[in-house]
Amino acid sequence: MSNIRNVGEMVESNHDEYNRQRFVSILRKRVLMDFAGDMKTIYQKKVEPNFEKKNGRKPKDGREIRKAMLHEPVFEGWSSLRYNAQLMTWWSVQPVIERSLDELIQAAKDAKAANPAGGSLELNPDVDVPRAITELDVHLMPGCFHTEYTDDDVAQGAVYHYGTTVFSGGLPHRRITKGGVASSIANYLKLAYPDFKPERILDMGCTAGANTTPYKEVYPDAEVHGIDVGAPLLRFGHARAEAEGMALHFKQANAVETGYPDNHFDIITSSFFFHEVSVPDTKKIFKECHRILKPGGLMLHMELPPSDLTDPYYNFYLDWDAFYNNEPHYEKFRGLDFPKTLAQCGFKEDKQMMVRIPNFASTPPEEFKAVATGNETLRRDHGNGAVWFTFGGWK
Amino acid sequence: MSEKSVHLPLRSKGKRATFYKDPAVDQLFAIITMLTQELSVAFDRIETVERILDKNGVISRADIEAYKPDEQEETERTQRRDEYIGRIFNILRQEAEALLDS
Ligand SMILES: C[S@@+](CC[C@H](N)C(=O)[O-])C[C@H]1O[C@@H](n2cnc3c(N)ncnc32)[C@H](O)[C@@H]1O
Image (tube, rainbow over all chains, first blue to last red; front, side):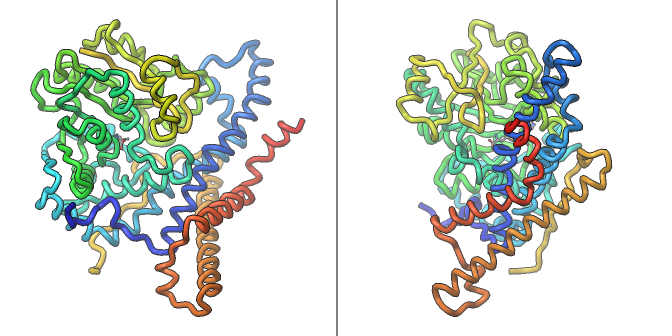
């Protein structure tokens, strides 16, 4: 392959930086596993029984549980730890990225100039960055997805890429599976629809392309595109893909108005995207997907499941991010009537699709295949990335 | 390498969350969590020094910076950090433990 340095692997943390990162990974694992388990115990053994005594019924939704939990010491402590671990994730990678930024930028330029894999990068500085992103640093990531600090900047792409590695570095399922969502969806589709041969695939809100790449791996003959509003993410994603020999086409565009022609894509997908989008924009994006999808094409997005499919405690747990992780649209998104909303945006009810897809890398191949070919329904729930909830429909 | 050209911000845009009635407690929580991290890192540094000394008998700063634990050692360190976090923040776990005992 080429001798271009890979922006996704070239950052060298020093001894203490590396160990700060490791600490945060393990802290997050503790928070999400043990401490979260304690909180549930206290809810089940104390808070819920007290609520029932007082009201003669169980809490009806996540909001009621939240109210009952808000001043429980375990909630305060768990939340504080989780919140701090989130911030510390970004802080643990920022210093080494600052120090390496000139080299990262140079490597990205080299990758673009040499273009060994034959992918592309199309930036448009006039693109309309949604207020959802400019007003709050989503995921508490300082600088969010769009800020540029210097010419040809890749810093936020690097912060996201290296930060998410720390973020999931302590979790058993996710350990080596960057791109786990996309590899699960792509492999699922390939097994479930062996005659479906997509020529063109689009990943919306692709960030640095972690979940764009697997589509090219599973469907090497397809043209794979990714759009996002953040230029530093796309520069980083393009450079990494080129260095890894992956021909991906990145374009700076708002998913509300992508600029692609009608009937253009066979598959349109996204991962962890819609919860960051306001509900009015969500509907516009579904309609835009319908417009640019070919007849017979499939739109299939991954997100957390809607709240009417999950129990109130789980909703309370998941909606934490809406309140504290600067993801204000999360709760409203999960509260949508999915079938109705999709139908309003052009995806007929009888052509809609809602499936839970097991995580490809951590599921035994026979089990994965059985689920994909419909010989077995999935028993396990979404948890720690073991199963991905997807929704959408055929055009 | 040249002077750092860019300083990335530490503060996240948006209101800082508070979980306690008195926001000073939230600030203390943040400080303590950061201190816990630094102590863990200091521990790692000592461990690195010890391991290099065990192996080579002499040491330089460059050895420390370049030191990369192998997989086995990383697993041991992870276990140590994990238990350490469990000890430091144990107070948060005691209510659940008591409820499970009763
Ligand atoms: C949490 S990230 C998605 C993560 C990514 N799919 C991955 O798996 O690595 C959400 C992304 O959506 C982008 N985004 C948000 N609103 C958008 C919009 N209206 N159009 C295009 N991209 C958008 C953000 O810039 C951000 O990169």
